View 1 (tube, rainbow, N blue to C red):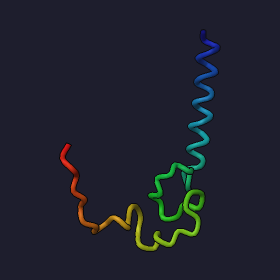
View 2: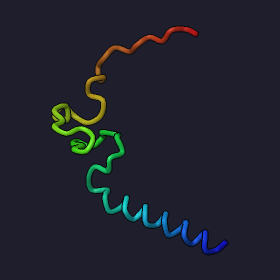
View 3: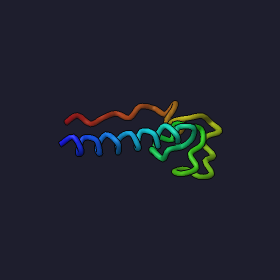
View 4: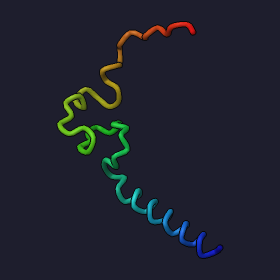
Length: 67
C-alpha cells in the first residue's frame, strides 16, 4: 500500500512542479485573463482594450425568462 501512495504522491509533486515552473506565462488553462495568450488566442487584438471579457463590459444586462 505504501508503494502505491508513494507513486501517487510523486506524480502529484511532478505535476505541481511542472505547473509552478510554467506560471510565468500562459499555461493553456483557457482563462484568457492574462494580457496575451498565444496558445489559445494568437494575434489577440482585443488585449489592447484590457483583460477579461472586454466585449461584455458596458453591455446591457440580458433579461432572463421566468421558468
